[in-house]
Image (cartoon, rainbow, N blue to C red; front, side, top):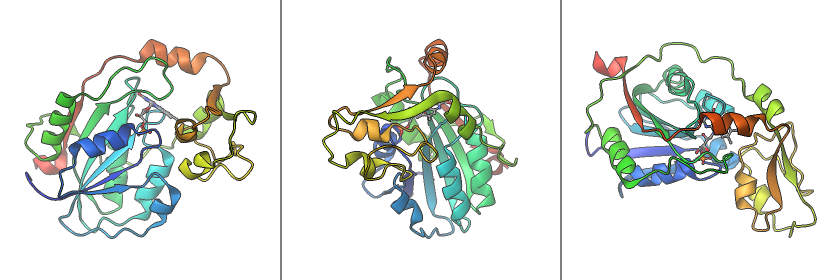
Length: 253
Ligand SMILES: Cc1cc2nc3c(=O)[nH]c(=O)nc-3n(C[C@H](O)[C@H](O)[C@H](O)COP(=O)(O)O)c2cc1C
């Protein structure tokens, strides 16, 4: 497995997954950013025995619905799949198992998976910075150099996503027109086309990912929480975590 050329596919509204994808990429690898809708609309072709690494964030204990929809749409044609779920040190749920199950249903061969901590975009306290030694461990893992004993069972259907309910409980993406400089950076950064020319985010489409907040040069956008509960929950559960590495049953057999 070592030294194979990899195709690294990442979804990264606030840059955590991108940083990890770039850290594990060698010069020969191909990086594919599927954060923007245009990129997910491309009909990417996969080849048998190609090695694909999917780097997805954890949203509400699962991979984002947009990533799940992307996987359902593509055909792996028996390509090998490694999955890295990047989470904010709060809870990881069954994101890896769900992603692996979805990839298997789309004709990929999930081989390995990892949970990797990164700064939580919502948290005022930025823990779990992705260090150089984390980057080395994850790179060794995707290149098959790291011995892994934990087993990942993935042959189960993905659970129904709780993201819509969680979003309603969390709050909304607020916009301050007095600060806005009408540059359009927010519209261009939105992974779900939720922001139109009026710069207000459509609450039905918005996934509260924070891409526009990060992109706005004037500080005109923020996630406005409906109650203090989400931040209290994050504060109470966020810990300095280390990466966890899994091998799927299919690779062991
Ligand atoms: C809508 C949303 C839901 C999230 N849910 C979780 C979660 O359930 N558990 C967790 O540990 N982190 C959670 N996070 C934190 C993200 O996993 C973390 O910020 C990740 O680095 C985001 O990836 P990105 O920077 O590439 O966009 C969530 C973040 C967002 C925006």
